[in-house]
Amino acid sequence: MKIFLLLLIITSTQVIFAQQSYYDDVDITLTGQNLYFELQNKIDIDNNTFNYGDMRDAFLVTDEDPNNNNNVLLIYGYNDNDSNCTTDRTRDKVAFGGNNCEYNREHVFAKSLANPDMGSVSNSTTGIGADPHNLRSSDVQSNNNRGSKKFGSGSGNAGDVGSGNWYPGDEWKGDVARMMMYMYTRYGDRCLPSLVGVGSTQGSTEMLQMFIQWNVDDPVSIYEDQRNPYTESNYGNRNPFIDNPYLATVIWGGPQAEDRWGILSTTDNEFANVLIYPNPASETLWVENTTSFVPKNYVLYDISGRRIIQKNINSSRTSLDVSNLSSGLYILELTSKNKKIIKKITVQ
Image (cartoon, rainbow, N blue to C red; front, side, top):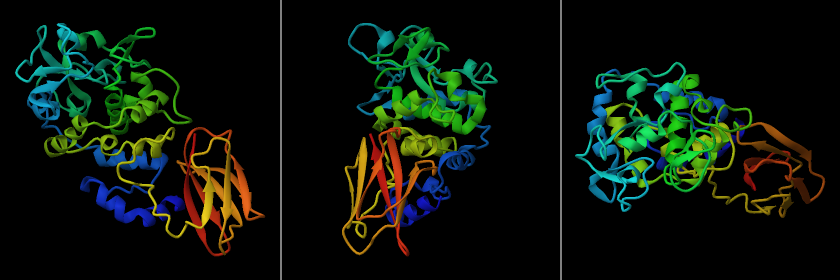
């Protein structure tokens, strides 16, 4: 915890400038479950006025095609030129309905997979079944093809994978991951990632490694960015993992996602005289002091603040064996008698 407090001091100007004002009352120096609960408290709103029927008009803004304001983008879609409307990536905004070649509302965290499930929905439904962060425009048949299948690893276009699972497509997997992160943060165990996806969890957390990786592999798009302002104004909250995918790294660990707020950026001005190389490292990391600052010991922490390695330093050049560490971001704390230096380290 003390590490991240120091880092906030170092980076406060950049962080405050870059992050949305919505998060001004959120303590982003927290890590792991503490940050999870902090964000949960922020986004856990009581809105019984926004209903499932409202999504028809909301889609005209949240799902608008950035390249053609007459169209909406269709989740899982990938081809507008194959004469098969099921695979369409875009659709005319007026073509909303339940017939072939029309689009409707897809619950990306399928209603029946929640525990307890979300129940049936009608235009007057409010609450979890009408949460706009979990609803996307989808071709009617494509929506039916996905049904309530769990998400599974794959590549290329959307479709069935594995033993009855569904791959959302290369363009949509990051969107899906950040939506599932929101749903788990907002609704807790009712929307556990393992209820909607398959695969191993990330370390000791409940987040799936697959969603963590998708969040890294498929960065936030302009299309995703246009959703949060509307939902904040008309629904009352935002999806934090769209605003900054790196929050997922801070909470659950794993490979480092895009840090859109510069949470761990440093100017390194006063630290330039301590050499740490190579960085990123895969086997051995070297620490070398070149001035009067002589560190006496170091501690390596993972992104959740857990102490991984601690060692005394007896020379001007010392080595750290990182070959057994998982890939991702770590924090190196170097301490002398009256000074402390903090560095961010990437293990690959």
